[in-house]
Amino acid sequence: MAVGRADDVDAVHAFASDPAVTQWSTWGPNPLSDTEAFIADAAAEPASRKRTRFTLAALFGGRVVGTAAVWTTSASDRNGELGYTLAHDAWGLGLGTETATLLLGHAFGPMGLVRVEATCHPENAGSVRVLEKNGFVFEGRLREHRLVDGQRRDSLLFAALLSDRETIRG
Image (cartoon, rainbow, N blue to C red; front, side, top):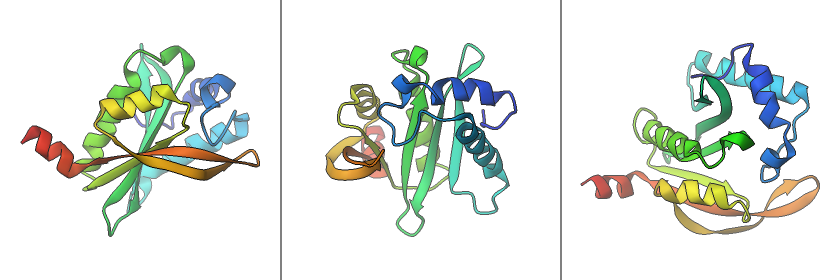
C-alpha cells in the first residue's frame, strides 16, 4: 500500500517518534511536523512524471507498522538504494525481510536497477540479518559516513546485484 492516506499520520508517527525505533536512524525521533512532511512527500511520489522513488507502507494485521522505500541513486549507472523502518512491536516477525524482498523485486524488475545498496548502523544486528537474508553482501565499513546529531557515525555498506540474483535462479 502506498503511504499517504490521512489516517496514516497517527500510525506512522507512533513509530517515527519512538526513540527505540529511531536509535539506528539518521533521523528522529520525529516531531509530528516531520512525520506529516514525510507522508506528504510519499503521497506526492506517484504524480512525478519521472518517478525514481517508491515509498510504501508495511502493513500487519490491517495496520501500518512501518515504511519502506527503494529509489534510484544513479539512472545512468542503474544503481539504487533501499531503506525500511518498522515499529518496535513488528520486529522479529519477518516483516523486514519480506519488505526488502518485495522492494528488491521492484528494483530489479520495473525500475530496471542492477545494483541496490543499503547502509545500516554497525550495531543494528536486526537490519544486518534482513539484508543478509535478502542476498545483500557486506562490502565494507564507511567510516564517519553520516552526521547525526552533530556527531560523525560509521555505517555498514551492503549491496545486492541483479547478476547475483540471476545466478542463484539460473
